[in-house]
Image: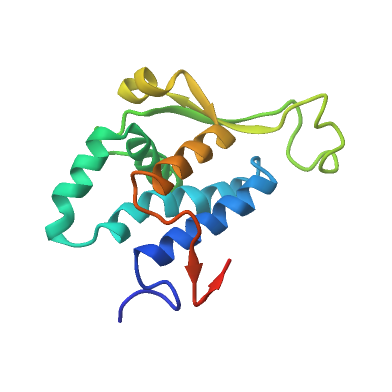
Length: 164
């Protein structure tokens, strides 16, 4: 078996990343959609450059682009809650920057008064390269810039023969 349903190659996972980004763009504070986006953003490296023969290319991209190190660390946090591999040094903390618990007010009621955003506080070499912290909107924009540029995803992706 190769792939899952209509997701059978790297371009298909590029389309999924585009889809996740469009969902996230509607509400950058939606942690469920942020999780989907992060997991896809990291695993896309293996889908776009699969197998042992492409390992040198994956390693070179990882070493050159700190956004990939950040994707990996966030992915590991999301999937395993606590990274145990000491190589994960790019995320100091992640938190919701809001004075209210999620759902206390109807969406959009206080948007101009109080922010509700997901924030990633950086550390290590990624902090040196990308700054002290990123909002989910800034992170997602950087991820898309990488994948649509150097990462090799087409600007518009199709899956199953139709644009999503």
